[in-house]
Length: 74
Image 1 (tube, helix red, strand yellow):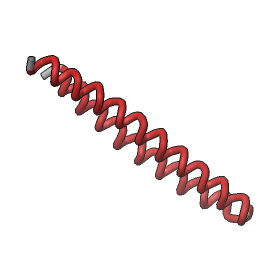
Image 2 (cartoon, rainbow, N blue to C red; image 1 turned 90 degrees about the vertical axis):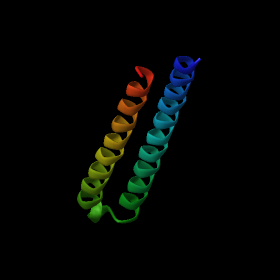
Image 3 (cartoon, rainbow, N blue to C red; image 1 turned 180 degrees about the vertical axis):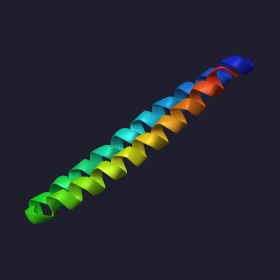
């Protein structure tokens, strides 16, 4: 019973991580496009900040997915 609950928790956790990362990057991209549309001259700075933030979001998502995989193998 314990193993099946660990697998269930890992699956739910991986799903939540994927949804959270997708929502975060989607909102980030939407706000970056909006900012670029308002101030085209600031596009390089906005793009750089967006790429750094997207990398941080993906890093957190990858870390969380690894935790879910480790929980699955527990």
